[in-house]
Structure formats: structure tokens, C-alpha cells
Length: 317
Image (cartoon, rainbow, N blue to C red):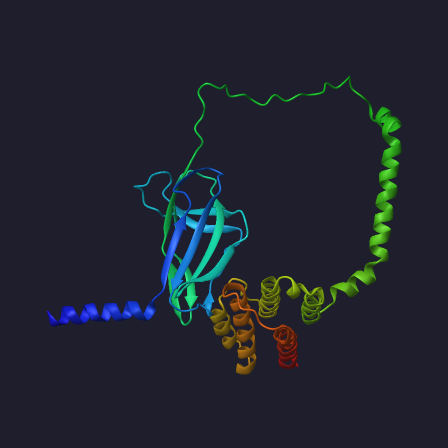
């Protein structure tokens, strides 16, 4: 009996320590093929989620299907199409901090579809939103209406024509096409040297140009969240191309682990992780850094690109 009491006390203390409540909500349980529906993830927490990291799905949401029966084994791969950009919001209600993120999805094959648990990092811990199930059905045919076929129309050919007759009638536009093709070839090879110079631009210079263009656009004045998102995408793209890795879908902690394997200086890794973490805070925790911080983190992004590229050249020499 004493051991049972100790287990109960341990479970209660664990629940109080964690404190976060994660939910998965669907705005409908049944839909027809191609009909949109909303999938909402929510977190209710007694503390602010300043260090939450969630990887947004783009294009498709992976799932499992039963092939049309709710009793069948859900082991058939299924993809739900993402119809609109992921939208999230956060607010406080009394002593609770609430975060919600919503997808607009649809499916293109009838089945019982299970949306598997989604991962999110809260501080140093990994949590999962519960799985959800939705039934996708085919439209019901109306027996009172006929099913019509597509009737194609064809133009009859008026007799046979010889090659000479064809050339006499259509020779003028063939001549124009040949002249246009000759001009195109001349322009292409005439600018060959210039094109080669444009292709020779290094990865470092190209990425720094993208950072400069992002900063000069001053999008941070109207949409700070989008500015930080684009800056983190540029840095991830540089590291992915530089090391020939797939880092676009990795979390910030996973990026740290990959960079440590490539013997990058720890202080450089700390700057990269700090930049990505601050971008995540702006995207998901609605952080509002001052304008001076925006300039500073943009300059740090340039320094990261320059330092990593220069380090690679030094190793080659």
C-alpha cells in the first residue's frame, strides 16, 4: 500500500512539473474528397513558451490510411495536401499561456486517415500532439442525373497535299522561323562570356547578396516574423549547400549536432544556433526584438557565411 501511495505522489508531482496540455482538434470528422478541413494544434501551459520549436509542414502532411475501412490496419502511406500557409497565434488567459497553430488540409482518396502525433520541442523536452483520425469519403452519385461522356470534335482534312504545295503555301512562316532561330543562336553565343562570368559567382558571394537584398528590402518594418524566417532560411540554405547536407527540415538542436560532426569551432556553432533560436522565438513565441538587434543578427549572419566559407578555403589550401 505504501508503494502505491508513493507511485501516486510521483505521478502527481510529475504532472505538476510538466504542466503543459497538448491537444489536436479537427473542425470536422467526415469530409468528401477535395473538401478542405482545419487541423489545429494547441498548447495550454502555466508558463510562457519562449523556447518552443515546431517544424512547419509545407506542401503535404504525412499520414496513414486504412484503405477505406475503420477496422483495417492503418499502415498504408497517405498524404494530405496543405492548402494554405500554417497560421499560429499565442495569447494569455488568466494565468495560462495558450498557443494554437492551424493547417488547412484536404485529401484526394477515400479512406480512414490517421494523422500521426506531431513533435514539438518545449525547452529541453520533446512533446507530441495526440494523433487524430478523419474519414474521407467519395461524393455520392445522383441516380436522377445522367452521366455524360465528352464528345470531341474533329476537323476533316480536305484531300491530300504534296510537299511542294505545302512549301508554296507555308514557306513564308518557315523562313521567319529560321531567321528567328538564327538570331537566337547568335545572341546566345554572343553573350556566352558574360553568362560564364555570372555562373562563376561563389556560394559565399551569392548568399551574402541574398542577405543584403533582404536587409535593403526593410521587410522587418512591416513583418518582423517574416524577416527572421527568411534570414534563417538563407543561413540554413548556405550550410546545406556548403556541407552538402539536408538541414532545411532539421530542428535547431539537430543542426548543432550536424555542425559539431564537421569540426566547426564551438564559438561559430554557438553563433549559428543563437541566430536560429532567436528566429524560432520570433516565429513561434511572438518575440519583438528592437531594431538594433535586427541589425546585429543580420551582420552575424554575414559573418557566419564569411567565416565558414573562409575556413573551407583554408582547409583546401
